[in-house]
Each structure stands twice: as C-alpha cells, then as structure tokens.
Length: 560
Ligand code: ATP
Ligand code: MG
Image (cartoon, rainbow, N blue to C red; front, side, top):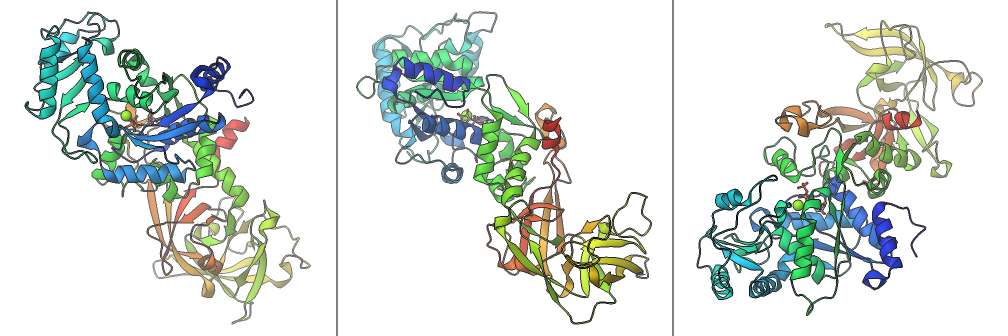
C-alpha cells in the first residue's frame, strides 16, 4: 500500500484504486506532449507528476507524442522534448510511442463505430457545424446527414481515406446527442480531411483523427490506468469515456483508463502557451527557444537551473484542482537554496574601478586563502592573488556618499574579502571629470589573523587583482515581462520588459575561474549565482549568465 506517500488528490484516487484492486493493482501513466514547440516549466510539472506518480507507485510512465495535427509539428520539437524529459531525470525506457503509430488501428475503430451506427459522415461545412451545434442555453440541431445508412457511411469514410474529397469536404462525426448539455457531446468530429505531410507517416494519410478521439484510445492501447491532464479537459471527460465505452478495442487491450484533471501551472511575469512562446521566438523578441529568459526547459537549463531545482519546485507547488498563479520568486528560491549549499564562491567584479595601493610593494604577489563555500566546509579553500593594483566594483566607492554608505569614500576604509583593510587616499579623474582610479593605502597588519584584522570596518567588498584578472562577459537577466500576468493584456507582447537582459563586457574574474569545469555553477560574491553560457562561452572568451540574484524575496515572504 502506498499510503505513506505525500498525499495529493491524485495519489488519493490511486490509493483507493489500489485498495479496490482496480487495474490489477497497476499504475501506468503517460506524458503526452504535442510536438509543436519546446517544453516549458508547466510541462515540467506534468512530467514530474506523471513520471513521479508512476515511480511512487511501482508503476510505469510512457512518453507519447500526440502527433495528430501534422500541420504544426516538427521533428526538431520531438528531439527537444526527449532531451528535456531525460534532462529532468526521467526515463521512459522502451516505452516511447506516437499517436501516429495507431492511425491504422484508430481508422479501424472508426469503421467499427460506423458499423455500430455510432458514427456518420457529415457534409456540413465547418461554419454550419458550428451553427447546428447550438449554444450552452440552446440545444443543437441534428445534421441532415445524421441518418445516412451504415453502408453509405462506410463507403464515404473509405473514400475520405482514399483521397477522393478535398480538404474540408466532409468529416466523420460521432453520433451521440445534439441536445446534450455538454457541447462536446453534440456529435463531435472524429476525423477530418487534411492534406499535410506528417513528420512520421509522410503523405500516407489525408485524414487525421481529432485529439478527443485519438487520445483516449491511445491511452487504452497502451494500457494506461490514470490519464492525468489539465483542467481544461474536464468538459471533455464524458467524450473520453464515450470513446472508451463505445469503441471495441478488446482485441488489443483490456484496460479501462480514467481521465483525471489537475490545475495547470501559471507563473507570474511569464507566458506559458506554446503558441505565444513560438511567436516570441519566430519574431525575434528572444534569441530562440533556449534563450535564458524563456520559461522553456531548454531556456532554464541554459540559464543554469538544475534538474533537481526544477523537480523541487514542482514538488513544492503541489497538485491542485483549481487554477492559480505561482510566484516566480518560488522558482528562484528553489535554485538559490540549492546553489547556496553547493556552488563554489568566486570573486568577479562586474563594473570595475581600478585602485592602486601606493604602499604595497610593486611586483609583489601574495596568494591568500579563502573558503570555497562558507556553508559547506568540505568544499575546501583556494588561493587568490593579491597585488598592488586591484579592481573593485564602481558602486563600492562614492565620492559624496549619503550617511549610511558603508563602503569606500575619500579618506574612508573598506575591508577586502579574505585580504586587507584599505583606505582611500586620492581620487583620480579624467578631463571629463569621471573617476578613473583610486589611490589607496593598505594596513599590512589587517590580514586575516593579523594584529589589526579585528579592527572595526563596516563594509567588506570583493576584488580582483589587475594583472591576474580574467576578462569575462556577464549577462544579467530580469523578468521577460513587466506585467505580473501578461495574458491579461490585450496584446501580451506590449508587456515585454525592454530591460530583460543587460550585457556587461569587460568584467574581471579571479584567475582560477578559467580552470573550473564548464558546467560548474558559481556564486559570484555579492552578485548572485552564475554559470557559463553553454553556447556562447568559449575558453578564450567566457560568457556567464546570471541564474538568479542573491536577494530572496520568496524566503522573506514565506518567513513572515
Ligand atoms: P500549451 O497550452 O502551452 O500549448 P499544451 O497543453 O497544448 O500546452 P501539450 O504538448 O498538449 O501542450 O501538453 C502536454 C502535457 O503537458 C499535457 O498533459 C498538458 O496538460 C500538460 N501541460 C501543458 N501545459 C501545462 C501547464 N502549464 N501546467 C501543467 N501541465 C501542463
Ligand atoms: Mg495540447
């Protein structure tokens, strides 16, 4: 019995099913993406739920491409989806399926429905079908083609398949109930004529099954027990059940799959529909599906998110029956918490200001020890070079600072992390009056462990030695949208954040950074968590993405 598992309502249903020995005590789920775009963080929730539920119940989860709509689908998407599911840490083993694998079978089932008097070929146009369907308050009208004979229907359906009719000339419809209060049950379309080359079946077919027909039967053929989908399919459930009950698939499978709906994930400052994400890509609003600002799995990966942080996020948001909006700060909190524990600390100056320490011997270099991660002693220590010329952040100095400025000011002192206390002696400016460098002095006794190291100096700054510094590019990111819910705008694109990316050239990193493995994640002291961009970064020109800043608004909110 699986009663010690974290209980969400889906697990509750499964527990009941297991107790009743339904499905012979088996749990078999599937993740059914349509290959018409890259996966996003919402899909991650569905992946974690489907694969996770199977794992937690000793069951299996299939990957099935729902490729019933050839006009929008591409092989590129199929490949990216497989990459992303694997990267998230899930495995379908040998259970990779395509709805298109079932096209012949689905066709035969439709023939069976016709023979049973449960489906008919209808020549109403799409507009007429809509008119005849009625409204939520008015019953629909029966199609004049509804009472065609079985033989005539069989003949027409065969000719649909043979390509005798033009696209849209007729459709196959289920004969259910034009007066049903559920619009989906008013003789829904099962097949349409569509001449489009399919990425797997090529031009073999010119009729394609509709999702509402193909999906339940694909589930049945794969012996799926629990068909988990998002809430918008609730109204389709009676049709799902109708297909299961009225199609005779007993020769191929014995299962009786059950559709269960859960709330889709919505994230603040994000859009999540593939159509919109595709529009952003195709119109160049972002650099591609894997742009680090995108909520796609490939974008998050390139940004530096780890699979474990995304799985953690999906676990924390839980599974609900009502739609809601999740704060993007929670996603950031998950990666921040993980990296705080295991990312190596590095000093990188993003906007350098040069300082010269006049009383430090020219040509001298000291290798000072500093910890790799104060949260994790096991990560050890490393040595960083200190010399007469250093970079600090421009914002760590102010010529005319306000009262509570605890960093460097003319005549003031600042502690350099794992090094000495320095004092600003002189400010050097160019002809335009801009500060170009600072002349400082240092207190030789103030090194860690030295006689004056305990001296009270309020600010501590990161720094990098000028002759040792490695030039790197750093990319800072903000939300892609300015509005919390861009979908609420008339045109979501008007909510795009023009400052969602800032590219900083000539940042100065400590020399050891060049030796660390490419996939490493770092905390740049006081600047956030970073990783190398997997595409742009080269050994001679490293490019870093900021995964997330250090400020944790989620932790603050959730502590209150
Ligand atoms: P979109 O609306 O973004 O185009 P979709 O539902 O059309 O998404 P599919 O490829 O059909 O995309 O989705 C595959 C699975 O992922 C489905 O079971 C779907 O319910 C689920 N899914 C899609 N978006 C979300 C989301 N935001 N949250 C949770 N599950 C989702
Ligand atoms: Mg879909």
